Image 1 (cartoon, helix red, strand yellow):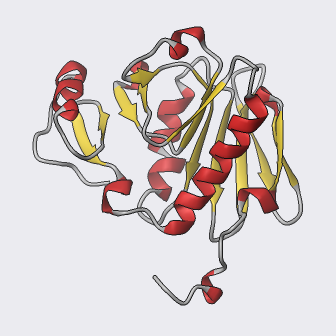
Image 2 (cartoon, helix red, strand yellow):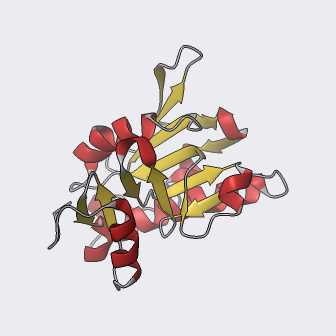
Length: 196
């Protein structure tokens, strides 16, 4: 992430300014950042995000929960932030009526890239933890073929469930299971990828 031209927006100024932009920007405590996708996400990133969204959308049909993909903004009020998670699931009636952004996701997925990995694991996860509605935070590492699911515990801690190999990922807060083969479907190993 890199800071764009005008720092020190208020949240309202950011929303107004971004509505006039042709590209997406995230907002954190008055500063505005270019979204990684602006530079063009790698194919694997888009495919994995799509796999997660498609599986969630199918599994949640008729449940009252809704899956959203990267173009939907998330407001994290306690962190004074707006983000564009790769995939979100919300079961909130308030979010179903939302226009510009969601604020009560139950599950968030971030697919790591070299430029965002440290922030996704650090500052962004810290902001996400301030959301009372959030029950699971999922980090997908394409290079390692790994899914890390951080699940909120009864005492408000976060417990890591690490999925690799032939395991089945369990997203318990929404009652969805998914084989790792489905998560990484149509992702070509780097040594097989001759183009790009």
